[in-house]
Length: 489
Image 1 (cartoon, rainbow, N blue to C red):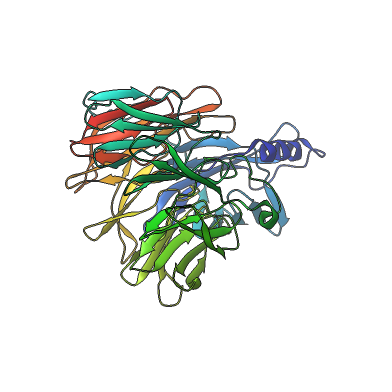
Image 2: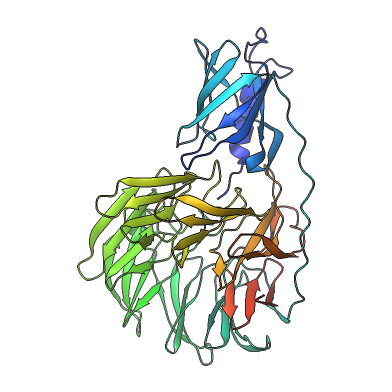
């Protein structure tokens, strides 16, 4: 994801900044410039400016061009621990030590080294990038409401749910509506199509099966056990409407749940076959490795592989934040992104860390896509699409796309497409633009960009879900309530 100053935290921090008597000037006051070093190597420009508020509390501005942050004030108190030691927590988990004109320390859960010196200046933000415009849409279809869900294409038909609780089937060739089903709850999750049925999960964690031919309901089964969870289904517990989605293998469905379980169900009837206790809510999809291994993440930071035959966990590794991405097994490694701002490569044999790739202070909501020996992955506030060598965790290329891209990149033979999101909510620090971007697959260069309507007040704009490919068309579903086809070129 993404980094956001939540209002409650900001209120507490502001109260802290305003409290207490006015202390003497602090030796930390002033501008500090230098670098931060991530685990993937290299170094990035980094700067802090410390100052006293009118009430005497120590505050700071952050200058971090790699995170599109330019001398931005943060309402987070700076803690003086004594002896030249300071802390800025919890959002940044920053520990600092002052010694003369040198300021050293670590940043984030990855404890990335900081090396700063007193003085220097912050360069102004760069001008907004200019990219070639996108080709005109081939068709649009009015969904009747905006959506967080990704479109899914099967046999020439696009399937998509909306925030109005409707589920649509649309002809991918010309955008003609085929049928619409109306449910009682909102639909944020990805659909899965198998034979004559389409499956999806609504926001009350009901797993629903519809007839593909006409949209009639086959069955609906609740997957949230309130007694096991100890509470009803929460409203948007992931902030950005992450939703579990099922996997179909043979005649069985596998799906995660907000009650902390992974369920197996008979695909024809919806009858529950078993439940595995995952230990924390599952808002990732279910992936598959080999014939019998299920892959998923949990909100306690776990990356899990589960044998679907024995219900025995064959792998579990912990990260420092919730995992809403689907773990990907590549060779002898398990790759997954976390809300602790790190993309991980774990050794499959023992769960130890093979490599880490830092997204600074950005959640990783994008499930990696493997194509021809590289993984392609999006970002939240990090606002990039990256092509990464899964063996080493080193980037082949990274391209700023100037918007949060929570979905997986859509990778074709010669291009990579990504939907981006802008937000206009209180506490937002980093400016984003919603739209669709096409990148050259070999170099990451921007080929064109489609700009979405600006985000409304207290809302979002652009495309939150993974884009879909329908022959020579890229299919996108947006917050503006439109399903759209663009040329895949």
